[in-house]
Length: 106
Image (cartoon, rainbow, N blue to C red; front, side, top):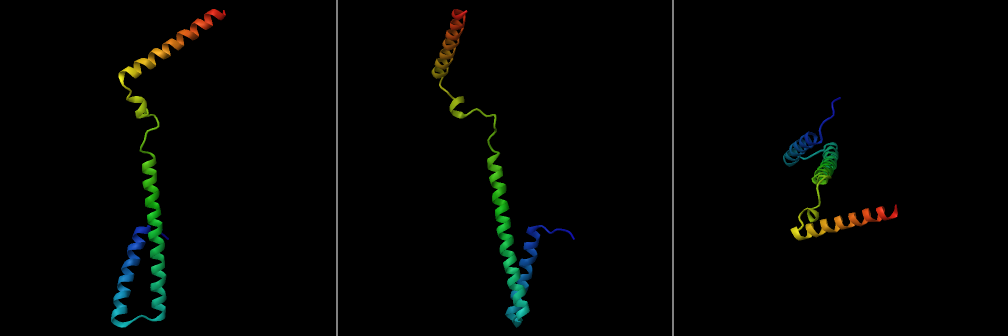
């Protein structure tokens, strides 16, 4: 037996419910028809919850993958020129100190 998609099952159940409501207006429902109607209503509720959860999960997954893992943080990427220059000088001065220390220790 082929598995039916939740969207198409929901559409079929709603169509049956609409027909049953029309029949109820014009002639009423038997207890068996009423039980079937209630069972379909319950299944419609379950399918709506299932579809909303899958849609929420898909949205969450889409949002989670929005940011690339290799992107530089904006705060680091857009530094004013003077700050970048100062950071570069500080790194160079630190490197020179470690080179001098390593030479002096030999």
